[in-house]
Image (cartoon, rainbow over all chains, first blue to last red; front, side, top):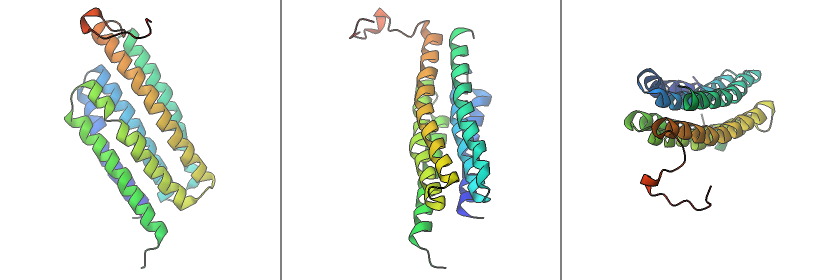
Length: 83
Length: 113
């Protein structure tokens, strides 16, 4: 275990909080949990790519960071107008 | 094994990043109001992301992975603000029907819009 993998494992534990909010909260709280969880998973992917010395896999984290932003905005707009 | 400045800095930054993410996780669980929860996403998205990205840049220097890590950090930093605004606005519209202040709230409107 190198420091990157330890940090990734720790962030994986922290992911329990957004997961619980997504499972139990109201619609807007679930969206907040999704946004917090997206940031955590992005960092986990980055840490795993560095920890396993697979630099090209940082593309996954970059793609998730971009897509989670678009997804979050769509969800926020959707919850504001239609749900 | 003697620790040099690089590994010490990486460990320190990773611990700071982990602490910020833990702070966010605890805040999300402890506070029930949606606006407070939105505020508690900031430690992770600012301090946590910046610390972890800095650790990656120390490890990889300005290589492909380092530049991508910086990009990821910038995107998350910018996206969290925009998403928080959109989410808070959606929460307010769902609660009150409009995001603009109502007369009962007695909020002074400065620019008249």
